[in-house]
Length: 433
Image 1 (cartoon, rainbow, N blue to C red):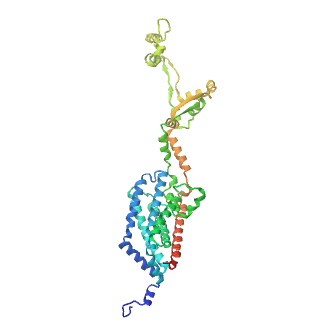
Image 2 (image 1 turned 30 degrees about the vertical axis):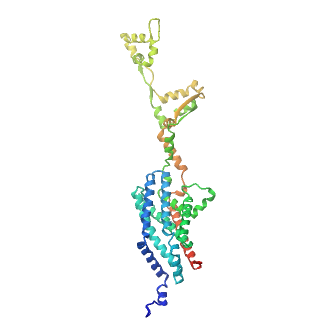
Image 3 (image 1 turned 180 degrees about the horizontal axis):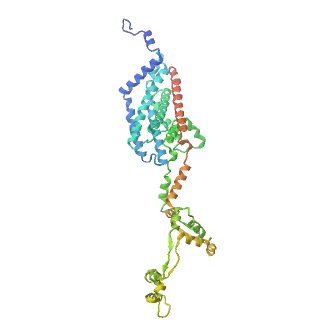
């Protein structure tokens, strides 16, 4: 009740605001009104804009190859950290004077911080939903089954929310430490740079300082997200670009006859196996040999050779083929059918050839020719496989334990920053101003 002058008694105020839970509801309602009437809702379209730019720029290679996916995943983590950080970096310091007066009037710091946490929780959920929708619209899709839910997008949404919320509470703690919004905004870029550099995914840092990664939100966030998209199983396609760049580069050198023969006897190589199966000889009749000799321009010099002062080779062959009595002889088959592989094996086994296995041969070809010789498809597949195996990172292993471990790591940050915010703001009455 109010007294006759219309003033509420101190006793009534004490009863009204005695409960910590009651104060949480009061301040949560205040923050909701600020969201509606003081344009705090603008963080949602900003989140959509940032997600759209990132998805448009990096979504084309997402979940297509390893390096493109890692870059896109890192960028999404940056989006979440950015969203969360700027949600709350100014929320306490901008009303520090009001918080001090209300604390002296009976406000519980824990109630005030918990109400902020509830409000920021709701805000981060909305930002996560907006981010996922926009990423999907620009082609950066999280389709398929998740490891914990039937939908990958839900699993990924949990990770994005945790990163955003932990970053939000980090900024909330910073806002309780500083006394002005100017100071808060000055500190914020350094905090973001620290988070991004020590994420452990894109930037190579000295081994001696790698334990610092454990103090960042970005590191477990990136590991969880990369694990969910199964980064280790994606092909490392940078080797394709490298091969295309050097495909026409000429290479050369001396190889031995023995090395060439060994290569041509490698039946496990698909390309060599195909070449070895080609027929390089066939059975021919004497008539066919004669006709080839008379009609093939390659034998023009041979045809012009004189056997006598008046007869050339060509004239003799032509005359013999016109004599009817020789038809039976001319139809006799000569020669032997063999494959290229049989010819190579015959040469390799020959004693005379064996004596010259160390003889040098000058080889000039392009890188592409060399790859084609040993089999382009199989060679490229082996190169990609080797590159992917060399890039394998156990931190990105696609297992439930790995993802849950990173989620718990981020949740620990949430708890620590909440406690630190309450502890720091308890000393607000010691401000000198």
